[in-house]
Image (cartoon, rainbow, N blue to C red; front, top):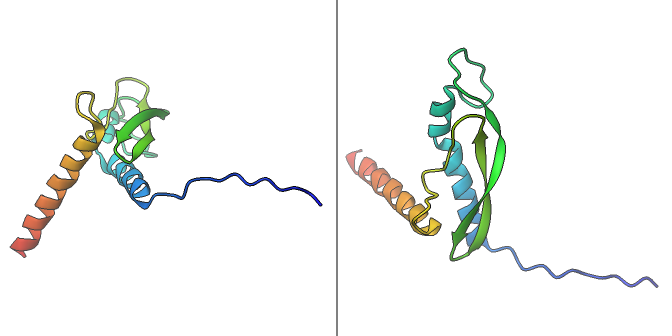
Length: 112
C-alpha cells in the first residue's frame, strides 16, 4: 500500500479574493495607461507614443495579507495605479477609492 502525503493548505479567504479581484478590475478600467500609450491594449494606432511591455509584480499590503499585483509595464515612462501609493498604506488608499466611487454612484441613483 502506498503512503499518500497531503499538503494542508489554508482555506481560501473570500475577503482576500474580493480585494484582489477589485484591485485587478480597477487597474483594467484605469485609463491612465491608455493615455500614456495613446492606444488601447491590443489596438494598433499611428499616434502611439510607447508600448506595453509585459507586467511587473508590485507588493500590495492590506490587513487581510500581502498580495502581489501584476502592474502593466511600459517601454518608456512609468505607470503606478492610482490606488497604490508610496506614502499611504495601500489598503487605506483602496478604501478611499471605493468610498468615493460608492458616494458618486449613490448621488447618481438619487437623481433618477
